Length: 322
Image (cartoon, rainbow, N blue to C red; front, top):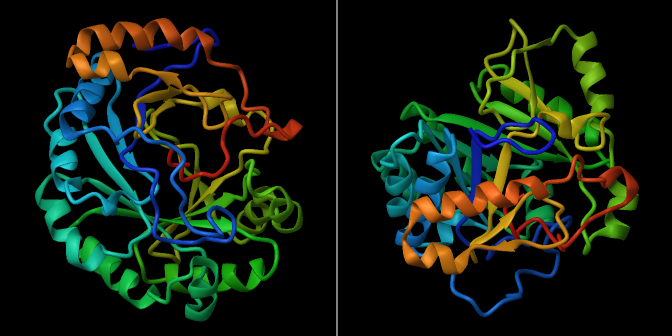
């Protein structure tokens, strides 16, 4: 089992398959995607080498992320590669849902277990304002289909200060009858959004306290789960999760590592730089890659230091998939 110098074990790989995104979310890419590199994204064969290496190190779950993963036409092949990797028990995709109705059946056919879709507002006009695309009804139709197929579905919503309580009530009404897990994510400061962060950051613990007072109950956290604290309520079909990276001891339960679409290992979302694995990946030698990752894990810091204003080399969250 892969373990760092602080006793944390890593069951979960977030593998970015592209940093490109077709949305223009205010807090991430307000001016649209602009390529920052010349190197091609990992091929299916290279991604397979990465997943086999991490599976040897105890990884149980792989999340294919971006950018927007559906911009890759070979995403179904990447899902299949993850699903057929010995040792990998769960395969997830994080997407903005733009293509969801037309692709979800194929993703399911190739082995998708879990789907995360980003929806920051259930108000159609506000959604269009945030993302630059008026496509919320289409995304909700895709989610309905995912649920029909039995895919465990989560919805990610970034907490934004202005209008937060209105959006919370809209989401709660939706969760009454919709069996998804809604995850409220605290807005995180990156290199590109400092002014936006200063005016829009809302503490997730404020929302969490409201939920507890309304009868929501905390669930146990699985070993390969993400960072959310999940709550259930007997009157709701859906669940609510909270990801609060500015809370005390947030990093103590870190169980995930990230590899970028260019083959760099990021020991933290907010590392100063990625550690280049591309040459080893290209050999196709999963054993050698596993040993290299094992040697590098000792460099993982105890904290992301976000609370001190550190954003490391993360200019925006599309670079390595959030």
